[in-house]
Length: 170
Image (tube, rainbow, N blue to C red; front, side, top):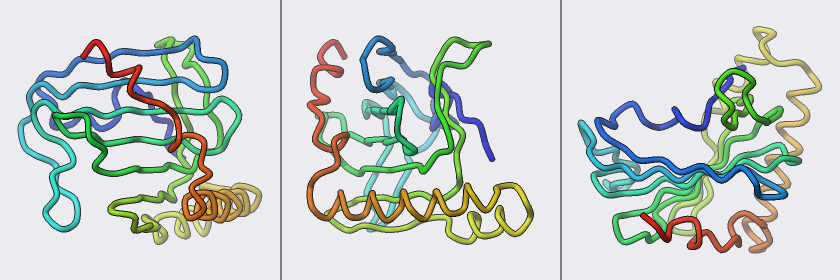
């Protein structure tokens, strides 16, 4: 399992970035990253740019759910893609005092109303190699099914969150 610190995820290409943390929300932690300058663009399927100079990444980590949501936005704050990480746990890191989550490998993306499951091989290998338990394995499958249902029915609370208030001062 991988522990991911919210202030350092998806910043490998970032030469310069700005970040804001919102830690006092009742149900989740939020970070907003403005990508000021990247060494290279990050391109997803269909040659769509998900990260570039002036783009944003909004990350939402629920305090009581087993998933985290990353929203990629363009320089006009339009949504490009939703990216869900299925997680074991989340909280505030004791060293850095910023949100973290323990990634359970399997991811779900929503782009152009198309749902894709990512990293299934990595997830299965993690189970076979003993990196995740049978309990974790079953949790991932349960959360995957729950998320797919919520996405298809439009009932995922984080996808329906009014995220614009977090982007106001950027």
